[in-house]
Image (tube, rainbow, N blue to C red):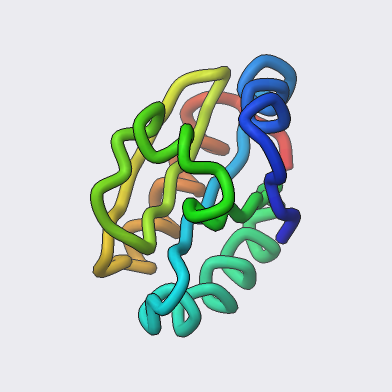
Length: 109
């Protein structure tokens, strides 16, 4: 998982990557730490680039992404948010959405 260090880096991903996952965390969030390796593993299995954002380090993203709780998993497809999960991550649903992108949208991974 690659850390996003700035809003500009996030914006570049949005404009240059066809598909990717953003995983947001907050300091002191125990669920965030527990789910981090599972999100990372699922992304590897589906060969999706995955990026991490500590929202305390880039507060502008909190407003830009409408983040009200952590963890949040965001799947992006062609510059747009495709799927979002907040707090309680359904990993089966997440795997389904990643497979759906490959099957229906012709994304090669």
